[in-house]
Image (tube, rainbow, N blue to C red; front, side, top):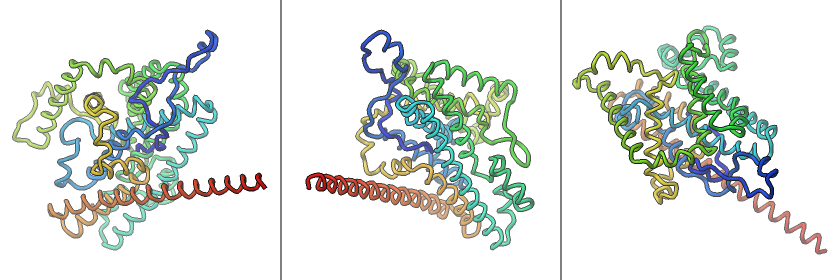
Length: 421
């Protein structure tokens, strides 16, 4: 689920490990940081592209099944848009705040991270409030309590005082509102993650993997209100977030030889094909079932605790994408991909909008028409609205930056004129 991280200030290395400036002495070399970033430059458009794609896929997957649902990746393998979202979140967060930690220190970087966490938390509370109002209004106006039950807000209507407190503690969430709480928790631990990676990046990733294994072994989880547990277990999903951060802090560069190996590519293709065949049996029962021993070993492919098969499926997709989609691919400047890139660059706002649009689409399909044509119209309309909002936000920010630049230039000219007088 943007990334929701701050927009990338410069071009992240393709996971490239940056090197420190030449030291003037052995002592200076010993005290130099283990990781340094290149100077700020262009955005890494591939991150924005796939972040925008993840937002569109999440919106479509949150609608009732329709024609466009068959174009989302969850129907053809084990992973889905959530893995894309969390990985890019970890990558961009590490790139932005890792640079801040190296340049301004741990305290300043931590303060900036906590400020961002607060912004995301406020966005979550705002989304929760408006989402509740939207569902309650529709359920009351159309005298259909099934909306409240289906979207998971019945407990709020019964005990609003208790539920509000639980919502502020991130323990109560309506349907489709699980990604932001996960990201808030992961970002809270980002200062520690970056500090450890500044010391030993590989050790940090190993510790993350150890927590993941222990979570599965001891069945660790966070409880939810009124019962149950978090749909996305942060103790498991942190592995994907930390892996994204590790790639941004030099891990991808260290894996470059492995990723360019033909053997690696063949393994990825074979695994993706096998996952595709398994996924087809879910939607096309005529193909038959897998052997019982295979089903017992494979199922359930747990999303809550980020099943190993899901993680491996994402890794295979990512490896092939990096191999065949270079950073300087001319298509990234194509106007046809501009809508996706714009949505990816303003992911927090577009994600929140997508949650509203998903319920609005659900309402239209339930009350107006549930036919294939209406499904297609609702899906495309939602995507166009998200694109339009991203364009408006981009235009506004560009205009504001341009106005601020002119004001600063005018002030500088006035100072020069005053000095000359």
